Length: 418
Image 1 (cartoon, helix red, strand yellow):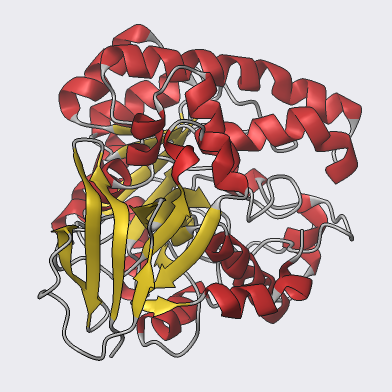
Image 2 (cartoon, helix red, strand yellow):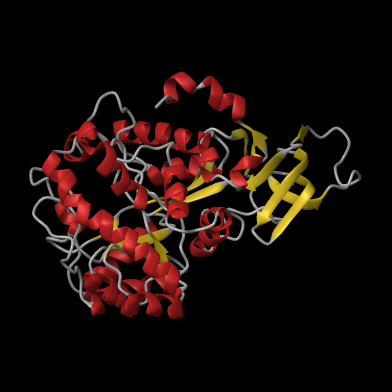
């Protein structure tokens, strides 16, 4: 089992709990101690790292990624082509490479938004067993979508449709949750509104309240949380009424819905980075100028929705919508930069990727340095606490499950280079 002690850094447990001359002790791959430095806490012979002048953070969490997407920025592949014409094994290998990029950028846990039959569940289990180096993965094996809904239209028309690709009606929705739970789901993702795929509009609601409520009830009965893709205001309203656990994107959120989300404890995962990348670099990443323009309203409105949510007291959990060519893995820091640009303090932004993300996931052992937590930690430049953009280049050491994997990731730099 892995053991390591990180000494004399500022140990950042939360914005309200820091230790200026701190000690983080990871024992048997779990945090054993996080607090002020005490010489007698660590057993003799344990590997020690001196973090003087640095900050020790929990491993960060990205709550919304599409893992098994194109990992090769030098060979731009349109999203439609990649989804429809690449094999499952090829997608999984791209996903593993994406995961290593995320880990190298300090994100030790990823919440994966489902890609059917590509092996994400098996990859997660190999990571959990300690067989490979990668981030923790929480996986929705597939999404739940209605016929002609966002998840249906997300795939090109030439892609053969199979049983289980769509679910229509209350009973079919219940069955889909049960099938996904049986296949090893960590959570359920449902498409509650349209998106930006060909043939649909983002303002379209998907699913009735009754169908969404059946999904939520069935999932909660099995201790699974429900993430609702919801751009449109009506999709958000129906999702809130049905009792989902998080709204993903929430681009057209209004004050009334934000207040209800805050009252009900429903999280927002804003995914600002995706549209930000598309606005700045979309035409170099496979989008047409018309495609970039079509995303502009959603981008501008998402920034407004973020402000509305914060003002209402909605819990905001960090998520990028990282997705291959369009929003590259390894650049997760951009989401936190956008939060700070929109008015969050650096501490609030870091909390969105640690404590708040942990609460959304229902996993107190993730995104935390409290005793019993997973042994995932970062040693970072101290200037990050005043300038979040330093996260781009200010990570000095990455600890994954009690092991220092910094050199391993550095040796893979040629393979991982963006």
